[in-house]
Image (cartoon, rainbow, N blue to C red; front, side, top):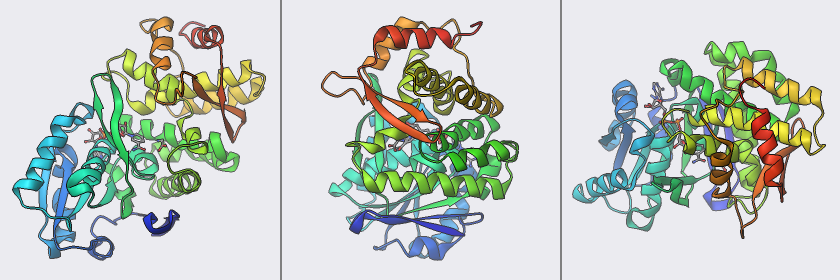
Length: 361
Ligand code: NAD
Ligand code: GLY
């Protein structure tokens, strides 16, 4: 097992990475301060791992609460149902919530922990690659609204993150590939050496090789922990973690959040961000080619289908959470391994970039 520390003073916490951590009762117990534990999971993950984790927590006689798997559960309704369960079971301020699942479980359980009795402890036990490399670390929690993703939420840090790469064995391949998009993102924004490692080990990652996965999770979390420690509330540097996300969120929204997985949309979004960087004179053609071929080798989409209109994407991008005082902010690359936030990119240039990434171009 390897351990990283997210350095946030008295809100800092360890990130444990290894295989077969789900059963390590002592690891959870170190971070449970009271006597009540509630295990929150989705239907799929609960069926696969709920019993094992409940067994590891048996000293606390945990209660398990489950909701239907999928992004469509990330709502205020689910949040209210979970909160009512805690109230009905007379959970007090000493309760610790354990979020066992992908990013949906982690985000909604974190939001519940942030608000239940004005804040209770929670532990992240991410089981998807995306959750292990991204959503479980850094304290962004929340739920979706019909008007957009993650529009209600809070920054609220867990007591620890326990990432068991052994759990990824059951993850559907499409979900694994979507998680690889975020792994590539870290290399692109902050660490060219790590990006080269990903290029050399992409086949092992996609084959589910445990040692490659542990390496990828460790270095992704290392980069994310550094960024979050420097800028917890996204006043500046943390925005770099959104490389490809402004394009990606617009693609997800344009397709009703039902066709594209988040990581797939981010994969194509990073292709668009690379093309934009090139058109802004920041990145050369060889670097763009390098980025696009890695994203393609990962099995992620690199072309925009004709069914998604440019005007729709531009409109949706204008509603992004990174828009500040009416100014759109985008993450581009000064070089491979060096992300930067820019403002004032013209709609004309964005439109050219989007059209340049269309199928057939
Ligand atoms: P998810 O939680 O919906 O999980 C994807 C699917 O995989 C689900 O059906 C789930 O049941 C299943 N699954 C999870 N682990 C499994 C396993 N080990 N074996 C078999 N099936 C498994 O989605 P996700 O991709 O993990 O996360 C996406 C969510 O994360 C989005 O809501 C996104 O907004 C959020 N997110 C949050 C942050 C953050 O910083 N908080 C960052 C990125 C994404
Ligand atoms: N996933 C972006 C962030 O945590 O800031």
